[in-house]
Image 1 (cartoon, rainbow, N blue to C red):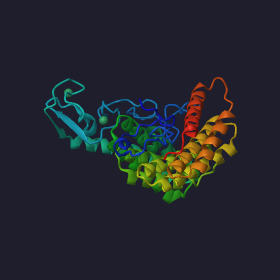
Image 2 (image 1 turned 60 degrees about the horizontal axis):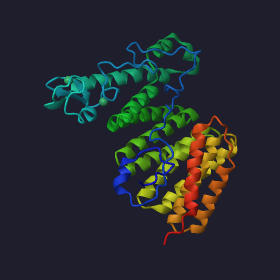
Image 3 (image 1 turned 180 degrees about the vertical axis):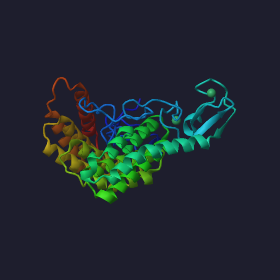
Image 4 (image 1 turned 120 degrees about the vertical axis):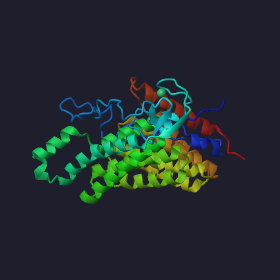
Length: 365
Ligand SMILES: [Zn+2]
Ligand SMILES: [Zn+2]
């Protein structure tokens, strides 16, 4: 059995074929950030005081229902609508192509055909859902916010960015990357439009940074490393404009930098990989300085130290590598965790073990 790197949570199928290195510098985050950048995901939408706007069709964030416009397989709105012949059940193309029998009725799928009419209904639905809110934003001078017209708009629509990201996350989880990418692209366009109108506010920068990062994940998932790097770079550009004391933003920023580093690493460009890992390390060191009481940030620093040191070793800078491993070990050994932080303690242990193994390893030659 090959040892599993403690840093890897995300599976990167595209790496499997092209991997030349035995060692795994690792990714330190799930493929897609688990949180909706708009704060509307199921974990964070728990403000009991506010009444959320409701979509009359049930397509809002809290009560999203599967309906005639949804794919039962990915549970997102249909993308590339495809009808099974002869049973006529409809799914996304990418979703149904994995089946030989219809998952709804069990009938043999003799052939499939595109259902462009239904797809255009879905597309209009998406447009309508977002455009309502968007025209509201476009018209919104600050003084006009209390106008009745805009209140009504808000009642029938959830924010398009939230909606699109949710659809994308569902599709991505079901491995319908093309669908996820399409929704995220639309979302990024919307935010860019807003940036053009309102300037680079922190909120827009952090949303765009997150959405571009997800687009990078999509490209990475389909093996398009070049586009992934481009999206991650752009994501980094927006996230860097934001204050360095926000825990979530600095985490996303450092993860994006590491993802670029990983892609460079697998591409064999170790110097570039090192420079991205080091930038990530610096972001994490800064973040840990800002909030020294957040143990997960100390762990992040240690993981980054390991990644930089790992590349240093591959580059033949053994002395610097050893220093990096030692610094990581020291950090983790002095990290006191509360007994209830079981998950963090397990992670601390496995990272520590990894670092100690690395340190014990002799210089390869
Ligand atoms: Zn689907
Ligand atoms: Zn069927």
